[in-house]
Image (cartoon, rainbow, N blue to C red; front, side):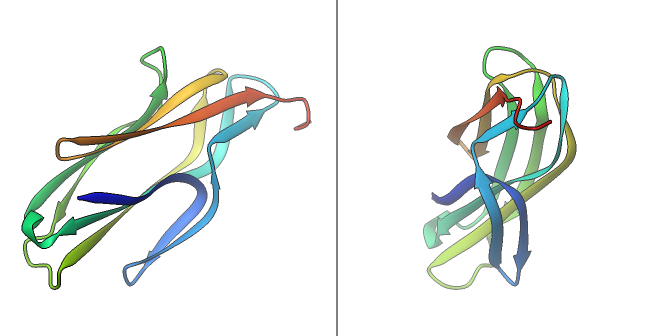
Length: 132
C-alpha cells in the first residue's frame, strides 16, 4: 500500500477515478479567533497492489496538536478492493468540510490511517491582520 497524495485543499472532486484538486495548502490565516474557515477538503489517493485486495479501513481527523480539539472530527470509510481489476487499485478519498470552526491559532495534526499504517501532516493556523 502506498499513499500517492495526502493534502488539504480548497476544493476537490473525483471524476471517473480522476482527482481534481484545487489550491493545496498547509497554512490557514485568520484575523481573529475563534474563526470559521469557509471550505476545505482532505484528499488522499491510496494505491493497493494486487496482493492487498480486500476490505480496507480508512480513518481520518484533524485535531489540535496538544489538545483534544478537533476541526474535522474522526471519520471512517471502507474501501473494498476485492473485485478490482489489474495490478494496482487506486482509492480516492475526498472529505469536504464547510464553515469549519477553528477555535485558536497553533499547529493542527492532519491524520490518515489506512488499516494499520498512519500518515500525518501539519496544518499551521496563524493570525494575520491582512484579512480585514
